[in-house]
Structures are given as structure tokens and as C-alpha cells.
Length: 461
Image (cartoon, rainbow, N blue to C red; front, side, top):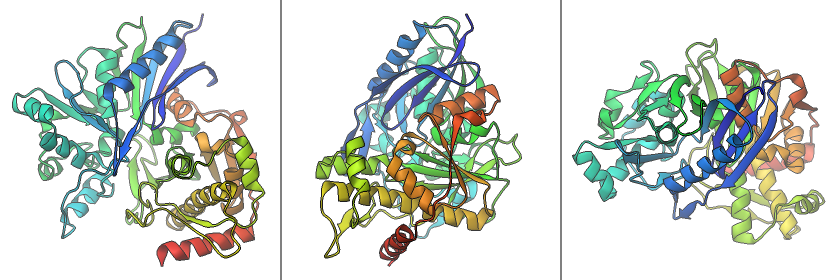
């Protein structure tokens, strides 16, 4: 029997294990949710819960088919601290969405340094301030720092240590970058940035390429962990190599837009995401929409509005929805600010049903994607195609809205698991076949475009 590739995808909603055959088809999968604790800007998970959930998915699939290699993709901004010798977690997993850590930078000098070295914006979403917060506020972390047993870094580095059980202490460049402690020119941890955040180099894992021999997966036969990378970075490799003529839109907990580029002198208001030195386009302009699936979760929690298929059909029939100021987890690019508070804005004739609220939230996601896509085009030029992936790309109403606002040809990945398949492509050095995509023609919607213009005027006013 031909051995398959096992791809493990640790995201904001839970852990997914996928078995992928040699033709890039997902032939089996197991998904399990992981509870997230959210309160007053603090968003975290139990590291043990993440690992137990991931291991259960691995065991479920490996008992069915042989696996020769394993790839691991992880949400990029999540960090934690652990004991170097035992790999036991000493802190919660602090999500990229967590905003508990604050660093004073009154004159903007630190922000400029972070931008210059890492290519990213200085913000609460980066890992550096959270890691320092753990040292200063968690007794077990401070004790480990004192006795030289502290390890810290991206969630992916800790999962590598736990999955291999061999004391592996490595992380790839893409995940290292998201800590804001990594230098793009040096492709390694930056001494000056470490000093700014009072982080010691020995606490952090060695930085290696995404494709690396991380070691055999402990207790799972001959399976070897051969790939570690960030979840959003993976979708760029659905085409095998970064393609400068493609805009990737991955619609998950947040929505991320990536456009591969050879370089960009003035990437404002975007970030420069590192993809790999070996490529013609080693970087990607990246835009962030923080409130995608998380905005729909907020709608369920705060307004008890369902988002199932029947609710989406009802939302499609709404003629006069309100506008929704979608600042869930803060406004991302191009505004980069924490507020204002999420709010529905009603006109006198606006519908106020749950279906109308759902439509307003979906419109807000489409508006922010369209605004960022337009600004990326101004920097990088027109693109040949827009590729959509992620769980929300299967929402037919959101897809129709995007077809009404985005220019050119849209390609939608037929499966929601774009991250897992992108990781398989990166590991296999292959592209997904044309048959993996569904073509959607742009259908300009003047009424929706007018609502977008009004929404943008309110947000920027």
C-alpha cells in the first residue's frame, strides 16, 4: 500500500489532520475543536488541550493507513513558554488575537526598528510583547528563566518538540518572523530586537527552513516530520511557487490577502511576509482582515443569530440591511487601529431581523477584503487571478459579494482545506491541478459598491 502524507493544521478553531494521497486529494480527515478562553482582549488556549487534540487526530488517521511523512501548519502569531527539558507548557497558548501585552513606544522608534528588521508592523498581535508578558507575570515562567530551563516561541516550535519527543528545538523562518524578533536581512533572531523586548537568545529555538528533517513522530512508526510553516503562508504554495500574478485570499478566523512580490520599498499599509529565499518572489504583501469567521462567532454570541445554510438563504433575500462596523479584534489593514467598538448602523428603513444582521456582517467582510485588494493592486499592479480558499470561501452569499466587488477572474478552491493542501504542495514541490479550482466570473454590483463607499467613508471619517 502506498504511504500517504499526513498534514496537521492547527488553527484558530481547532486541529485538523488530513491524509493526502500522491495526487493531492484529501482521502481522510479528522477535525476536533479546541476550547478558546476569551475575556477583555485576552484570547488563549491550554497547550495541553491543543496537543491532546492534535495527537487524537494523528492516532485516528494513522491507525487506518501508513504514513511516510508529516507536515505541520500552525496559526502564525500564537506563542507560549515551556520547560526546555520536559516540554511541559509553563504558560497558556496566547493567540495572535490576544492583546493583553502592551509596550510603550511613544516616539515610534521601536515600531520603525521592528518594521525595518522584520518587515512586519509593530502591534499587539506580534509575539514578542506577549512572551515578555509571560516572563513578567507568570511565576513558573520566571522561575524557569532563573534556572536556565526556559524555552519560548511560536506554538509550532513547541508542537515540534512534543510531536518528535526528541528534544527538537527548531522553528521555521515564517513563524519566527511573526514574533517580531526575527531579522529579514539576517534570516535569524535579531540581537537588537531581542534586547528591546528583554528576550534572551537561548530561550528561543533555532531557525531553519520550512522543509527540514525535524525528526520521527514519536510512537508513530516510520512517519517523519518534514515540514513546519505558518498557516497563511501555506496557501501561496497551492501554485507550487509564489506567483506574482495571483492574489490569494484565505478566509478563516481572520481573512488574509497575500500577493507574492520580489520586493517592495514602501509596503504601507501592509506587511511583508517572508516566503523563502529560494524563490523569485521571496516575499508577499500581506493584508489582514481581523473579523472574518470571528465576526460571525461574535454575531452568534452577542445577537444569537445563526449562520447555517437556511440563515444564509434568508440573508440573501434582505434588501435593506444596516451597515456593520466590523472591528472584531480591531481594524486590521489598511487602518491598523483597535476601535471603534463593533456597531450596527441603521437607517430609518433598515431591516432589523437576524437575517439583516447576518447580511451586514458578511458585507463588512467583503468590503474590507475589496478595499485591501484594491490597495494591493495599486502597489503591485493588476493581478491575473484571485484565488479564494478557507472555510468562509464556501459561504455562497459571501462569495457572491466578493464576485461583485473584486475585479477579474476568481478561482475558488473546491475544498475548504486550502492551508493543508498548500502545505502538501510545499512539501511535495507540486501545484494543485486545475481541476481543484472552480471558476467564478466577476459580476460587478453597483449597489453593493455604493454601500462599500458609504461604509468606508464612515470608517475613515
